[in-house]
Image (spheres, rainbow, N blue to C red):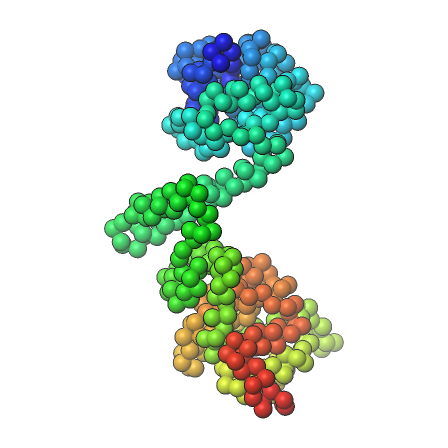
Amino acid sequence: MKEKTIVILGAGRLAASLAPALARAASLVQVYSRTPAHARALAARCGCAAASRPEDLATGADYYVLAVSDDAIPDVIAATADTGGTWLHTSGTCPMDVFAGHRKHYGTLQIVMSFSTDPIPLDDVPMTVDAPTEDDLRAVTDLASAISNNVRYLPSDKKPFLHLASVLTNNFSNHLLAMADDLLKSNGTGLDVRMVLPMMQSMLDGIARGTSPRDLQSGPARRGDLSTVNRHMALLEGDTLLHDTYNLLTRGIAARYGNTLTDERLRRVRGIAFDVDGVLSPSTITMHPSGEPMRGVNIKDGYALQLAVKLGLKIAIISGATVEAVRVRYASLGIKDIWLGASHKLPVLEQWMREQGLEADEVMMVGDDIPDVPAMRRAGVAVAPSDAAPEARDAAQIVSVTGGHGVARDVIERVLKARGLWLDDTHAFGW
């Protein structure tokens, strides 16, 4: 590659690693950047010329490598002329045909690495290549192979999946490490996230040896260790973001490995608290001529609620509604704990738990909107109807049927089945 000449367009973090590698592999003749100081600084490090005006872009080079942000690629192509050679960009998401109609020879060179301010050696960094013709693909592959030992062909329409996988593994895991670091530092442990790095490195070493990440998964969600999960969730009560992140990832891991953490939780449930509007009745109500809102009820909900009471489940109604018809309806089913006008439901839920001697992991909370979320997070099992607000669905381990169309029947049946009580008592066959 020494006889080949290269121009790199860009002087940011990626270019800071790519330009020295290109200079060692071939003849880097110019660094082009719209910011003159940046172009001069990188060019000085690589021993080549600098340019910052389109008319000063070198002509006749073998390669023109765009190491700029995705959004800048079309602008750079439009601002510069086709100076010959093979043009390529390094984006994982920008389509290859951004060059079409503007350059005769082109391709893509995707570098699977996150770049910091310090230059990174590229010898073993994975790269993928693509081009519209065999000749262009050969040219791009030759260049990539001169700077990396790990080059693969990947069609351009598949590159976004690799880029997304990179975000999942690098950006998201780094965010989790930052959250773990904050957790340790803010809780007086005297430790930081470096304590977990050997464990993480062991996992990465296993993957590098060819073991599937699925086989390396460990932890309480993988084991179905509900008691540990509940202890962790309790520690995170004051941190909504970390609490929700932990909950989401735990549910995902449990589902992947068939560990029905929810079923285990259901077996512990001794009390269920329900919101009314949007849960036991539809999210729309009819207004009586008198101005009083009128709610519909589901007959199968009524059957399930009275059965749950007869079988010893603690049932509570916690609603912001103030209409006495709500109290009359649910009192007729044997429910004694009915709170109306509850503008803040978490204190009411906690009062009910104390009065009934219920622990958090023995309680299910069923809600459909933002005012229900704090109480849902407090309960061991949270349920939302399928048409609930996104915030309520995100807080739930179970998403039930549409509000007002059998939510109580659904969740009570789940609990009784988990406890072996569904249709297992003479109470089931009467009112």
